Image 1 (tube, rainbow, N blue to C red):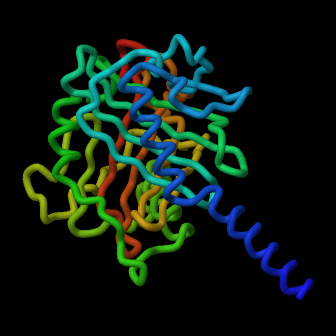
Image 2 (image 1 turned 135 degrees about the vertical axis):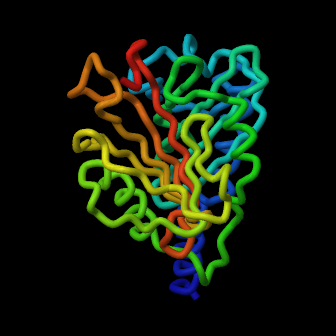
Amino acid sequence: MMIYSILLGCAGLAAQVAAACSRESLREVAAAYVQAQAGGKPTLLSLASNTSYAENDKPVDITKGVLSQPITIDFNRSIYDTTQCATFTELTAATSKHPYVIHTRMLLNDDGSKVTKIESVVTDSGDWAFNATGHLYWTRQEKWEAIPESQRDTRAVIQAAGDAYLNQWGNSTLPVPLGTPCARLEGGAYTGQSNPSANTCRMGAFPQPLKVADRRYIIDEELGAVDIFNGFPWLEATKPNGAVPSTNFIRVERGMIRYIHEVTVCETPHCGR
C-alpha cells in the first residue's frame, strides 16, 4: 500500500509538471498579452522579477515601450509551444489611432507561471511594405484551424519547412516545400490575391545571396505553425552587411507551406533600396 501511495503521488506530481505548461495555460498567457497591449497595461501579464523586454531587437524599458501604449487591436492570432513553454502572437491594429502590425514571442519559466522574456517586432508607417489595412483584410481570409492529430507534422518537419524558405534566400537552387495553394502576406501585400488556388509563394533569386541569421523559433504542432524571428540582411542600403529585425510566421500542412506572413522593420528612409 505504501509503495502504491508513493507511485500515485509521483504520478500526480508528474501530471502537475506536465500541466504546468499546458496548451490551455499558454492560451491564457497569450490572451493576457493581447489584453495588456489593448489597454497599454504590461502589469496584466504575470512577469518574472527579471523579465527582459525588447522591441526590434533592442532592449526597452517595458513601461516606456509600445506595450505600455493602448492600441485598438482588430485581429490577433497566437500559437502555443508546449515544448519550449512559449507563445507567439500576431497583432493587427489597422483602425488604431496609430496603426501597427506587431509580432511578439514570449518565453516562460519552467513551471509556466511567469513570463521571462518578451521580444516584439513592431512595424508601422515607413516599414517594409507596411499596410495594416491590407494585412487585416487578408489575414482574416485565411484558415489556421487545428490540424487533425493523424495529419500533424512533427516539430522537426515544421521547422525544416520554415528554414528551407529562409535558406533559399542564400541559394535560390535549394528546394522549398511550397504547397498548392500557397500565399504570402508581406507587410500588407498578398501574393494570393490574383489566384488564391495557386502556389504564389515562389520567389526569384535576390541580387546577392542572403544569409538569414539569429533565428529564434516558436513551434505549434497542432496548428502546423512556426514563427522565426531573424535578422534580415540586404534591405537597408546604408548597412548592406547588417540585418534588420524581421519575422516569418509560417503555416505548414502535411509538410508543405500554406501561408507565409513576413513582417520586417526599416531602420532608415533608404529601406528597400
